[in-house]
Length: 292
Ligand code: UTP
Image (cartoon, rainbow, N blue to C red; front, side, top):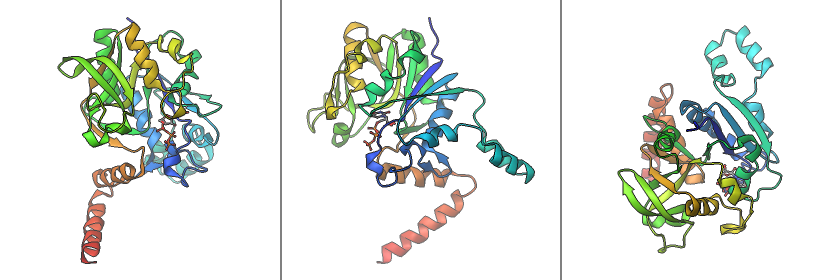
């Protein structure tokens, strides 16, 4: 069986939910405390055994390439000043090769994944979206790869969400359940309120067989006028079983502003250096605003 060693990180979207911040800066570079969102995603991929990452970029996304490149001037400066801890933090991750391809137009997530097809070839591969950061004992992607290794079938990461949230996600209609693993009857992208077939929401982590490109190739336009990855997975499930895995871990929704702020607060509270002070600041602020 082929091992999953390649991953695609689509990062060519317009990030409209974060305007005006994302007018000149990629959404994927918005920091959670002191690290850009995409770095958390790259770190999860590395911890899951991925050796090659291809980031799908687009117009205005050069900052992502610069971030994962070496910065000689900065490194030299930190070295001369003896700031070795900072130097270590700024270096390019050595354990992975990062490649780039441009999506010329943001036609949808499915199209972004399709843009990386030549890099993937016939190998099974992972897709990680920056909208969700997951903290888990076993990295989220590793959990999916373990399931892929056992079933030799594509696996998508899901978690249960509240009924009032199902219209924001791709939703899985399950068939059979094997502990945390589900066979899939069908998938629906962002079902209208009250029509979702379950509360199992797709969470931005996938392990897919290269067969998916046959369906993405058709460039069928789906929900929101975009070429949807969920629609291609639906086709793949009809020809070769796809599984959904209810992964373990704390998911942080950083794809919209409220989730992003909540994640920032929680990560700041967890931070060894500033966590204690942040707690005091929050307590002071609560006192101030509760008095108003
Ligand atoms: P999103 O829909 O969350 O990202 O796509 P977006 O379109 O940038 O955000 P909003 O809705 O306008 O605020 C999920 C991921 O897929 C990528 C995005 O960069 C994001 O990481 N994506 C989306 C692409 O790479 N290309 C696309 O055409 C669409």
